[in-house]
Image (tube, rainbow, N blue to C red):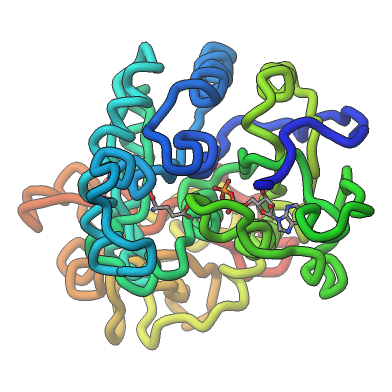
Amino acid sequence: MSGTSSGRGLRAQPLPSWKRAVLKVGSNLLAADGGGLTARHASALAGFVAASHAAGRQVVLVSSGAVAAGRALLREHAPAAGDLAARQALAALGQAPMIALWQSLSARPVAQVLLTHDDLRNRRRYLNARATLRGLLALDVLPVVNENDTVAVDELKLGDNDNLAAIVAALVDADLLLVASDIDALYSADPRRDPAAVPLARVASLTPDILAMAGGSGSTVGTGGMRTKLEAATKAAAAGIPTVLFSGRDAATVAALAEGCLHGTLIDAAATRMQARKYWLRHAPAAPGCIRVDAGAALALAGGRASLLPGGIAAAEGEFQRGDLVEIRDAGGTAVARGLSQYAATEVRRLAGRHSRDIEAVLGYTYGHEIVHRDDLVTVLPAEIAGGVEA
Ligand SMILES: Nc1ncnc2c1ncn2[C@@H]1O[C@H](COP(=O)(O)OP(=O)(O)O)[C@@H](O)[C@H]1O
Ligand SMILES: N[C@@H](CCC(=O)OP(=O)(O)O)C(=O)O
């Protein structure tokens, strides 16, 4: 058995309010064991995405199913399941049909985004992926993310779209991670092995006891099982994002989700998203260099709502790369803020004192008007100085 789709009496609960979510859809929902891709469960999930969009919400889809689709296409000629290179070939074969399935179910254009964990560990590529995904959302298209299995050897072995979904949720500043699977909840034990296992409606904190409840996958196409779902929830929680686990096999459950009603497991975030992000910006080690700003910019930054524009910059000291966390200091050397620089130190030096509209003329390209965007910035001045100037 690969899990049950409708429950053993889970009560309904309100879905946390959200504006942007990542929806992860597992292989089991798109391709039954050994079978090809089917819209059977995907159509209700696509309906949820469309209803969310109509309500002014944004969804990034993280979809598995490429390997299962590729395998079904080759039928009896498909290679053995354990052969890694063959699985990568199957992923390449099944990726286009998987995207085509989502496109056939979506009135909006669908964009394929293939990512590896390496892309997301590398700061530059992380920022580029973030800009692309934000751009796709701004264009009102539906991004469908999958792991770039062809080049991600380790990751394919682990089969980790659950963790990828959590990283993407943090990447796009989602306020909710939705994990659709073939099971309706987290159970107190793997329900395939323990018939006495009971579903949990809410998990306030992912303690070792809770993590120990999770087993592996119960099917031949699913890879991570509940273990990787709880790893993903742990990552999301640390980024201030709650996770919900629910059955994508149960059309009524999926329809209720669009109404803000959850039949499944809600895993709370460790902190609010803002707290998690601010904590990280405040305490993560900064790059060795720093940005010096003039008095006007220092005051504006202290207000907590301003971005740092090139015009307020006096100098960039030392070295830092685009995407690095940098300290911003006033003329006297006092740290006034910290944030993620959109430009490298060499670029900031060339842009210091210039108007934002000149960035492209000076550099020949632009990453945007802000050197540090206010969403990526925290103040480090005492509260009484804050609030002086609003951007
Ligand atoms: N404690 C648990 N609670 C619920 N499901 C569990 C648990 N431990 C293991 N599982 C298994 O995890 C499976 C879901 O993961 P997986 O097969 O990887 O699906 P997907 O393709 O949706 O990622 C369930 O069908 C179930 O067999
Ligand atoms: N990237 C692979 C799936 C990896 C994966 O995590 O699968 P699953 O456990 O079904 O979400 C694919 O598209 O087949």
